[in-house]
Length: 185
Image 1 (tube, helix red, strand yellow):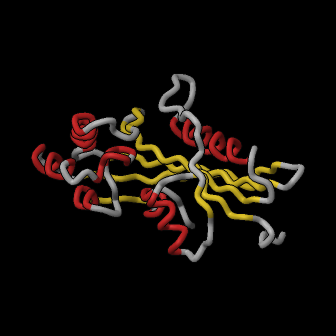
Image 2: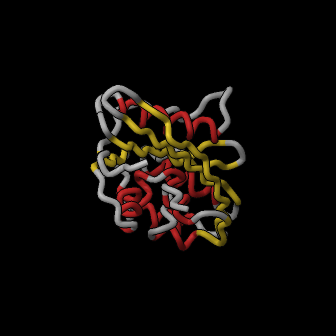
């Protein structure tokens, strides 16, 4: 199938996803989907929540985009079944980082790819990718200093593996780019 006649749209305002795609040489337009994400649901697994959020974003954008390939994604951090989303403030960021301290957790990124034509919307691919991340043992003041950098403010789990938050990561298993926010493999 030829995709050259389609516009590639990233359905995300994540600077990390944009950087990953640009580094791979993709040309794309960014449109932030105006949808409300599910942050928890007693009947849904974390993977189901991530894929639902991803699909909702892509479907929303597909309504007004014709002849487009739309990529959307959702990344969540899960510790012992609890979803740690983006912190609302510095206090919440600190609480998240202290919970993650010296523990293993999971980063789940789900992505959806939809193709639109003038008459049809088709789901090309959906996938959930999971990586395991282990934090080292740090002191509260280490996390306070990190929070003051403002890096954690828009990150699931309040940290960035590709930024200053990398220092807290003792080990990880799985896709690095998945932890950043978009599995490229």
